[in-house]
Image: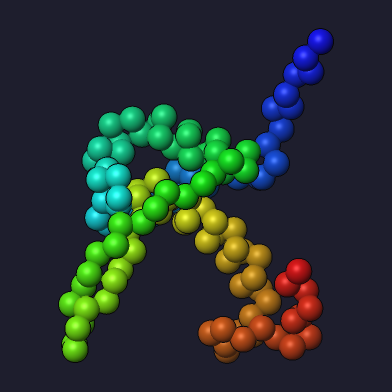
Length: 124
């Protein structure tokens, strides 16, 4: 007899976190990525799209799509900018918030990138 799959997700990501990340991405008004999907198009099935992101991230099956390469002018030439899809920007925002909560307390209050020496080994 087939065993039932557990409904427990291996990664503790709440649907609220995905919703808050979506709101942040929407406020930034970014351009569409390689899939051409704008925020407005993403919102046509907002509940389904957010559920898909949450399900894939919390189950560990999320895999980011390619980014759109866009050349932007810079003094003396151009620079390539990678534009992720709307869905991937939401996923990246969720991950960034998780990482910030974990590592921000380890940084010295007057530092913008250096870990306190006494906490250096506690990153792992």
